[in-house]
Image 1 (cartoon, rainbow over the protein chains, first blue to last red):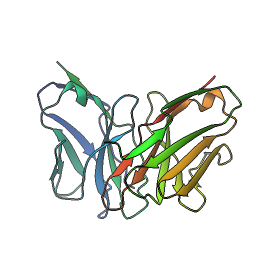
Image 2 (cartoon, chains in turn purple, orange; image 1 turned 90 degrees about the vertical axis):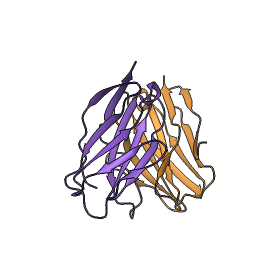
Image 3 (cartoon, each protein chain N blue to C red; image 1 turned 30 degrees about the horizontal axis):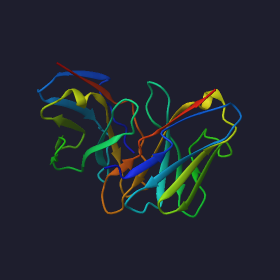
Length: 111
Length: 115
């Protein structure tokens, strides 16, 4: 699976949009970009995933660049409960779906 | 609601004892489940892949005799930490993939403390 690179930490004011970047310059054509988050002392929570088109669900939007070398997770209106570590993972879902977690981005939402 | 459940959510045991952690897929069948370990302030590290009806596949550096994995049914995998020692204290997390969907679901995690 392709390696992903994320900033170590980010801050966001409550109510504002949180934009979390991820670089995956070596991603292959059949690898999806998955986003998970982990709130302290809980298991990771699935957020969204995509291949090449932008995706949106009730939690977030995923913007993937045309060359697929990077993506951005957007939380449109961040709340304090969105404070968590966010992981961007490239994975070939044609395999057994084991995920390799990097260090992720620690998002701190503040008042 | 949770689609993958772990039990117990936390356990404290004495050094030298064995501890079993269960991982259940609640409303779907999972031929493959995954076990992760997470130390404080670190990321999740994959320990092993649990395969229903066959032996688990362990990642490099993980002792298979220390961490026994059994996947006897399509909805249950168990991880047994044998002869636990304080250095085995960690947050253990399982995951399973619902075949009909793209996402991988994670359990709530089980925190093991070995005294």
